[in-house]
Length: 227
Image 1 (cartoon, rainbow, N blue to C red):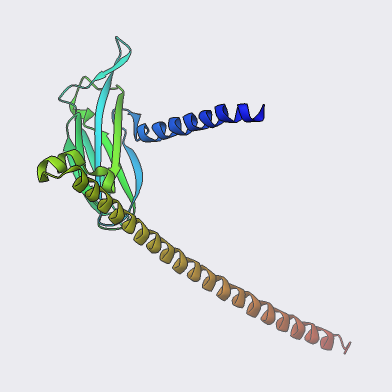
Image 2: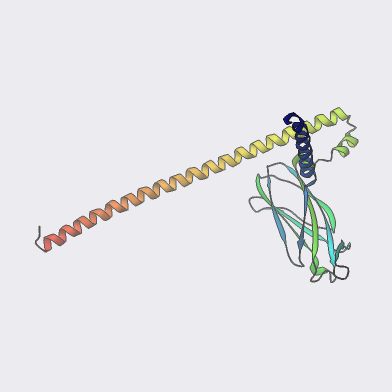
């Protein structure tokens, strides 16, 4: 009986793994809702010298039909990107649907903020907007079919190009992890040094307090002629 049940279990396991893989492949985008003057920001951890592509489209809430409908061409989105040092990498006004691209020059957390130009549109006043956003980082941002058509690459050459881009991205990720480890090490050493000096200061204060108490008690006993 055990031999009969093992086959279906393995088949179910393979099906579950396939389902997880499909879910992981399709779950790259997200959507969120924003109000008239609301700004929504996201934090993306990006290595240095890495290209990032963001695709978005907007839908406006229809109060009469009570559904989200494609936004009118007059509605736009303002995209602003800041690097870990707070410097503005990208600040630009786009349409109701579009793509923004930037390249990181400093490793770390990049802030990506979006808000609408709702103050210019009477139709959106007091309304709600749904924004579909998909952010691709590194070699995932490359459009390989377009690259193959432009450079006239064969399937083998295209696959080699993809592998090279993946290796380059892995190297960037490793460099970024080493950068994070170095920063963490410096922070830990600084914290340990501060703790050490604080412990030394506490010890000195306790010793001085003890000496002062002993001299004070000695003076007290001598004044009372107990010593």
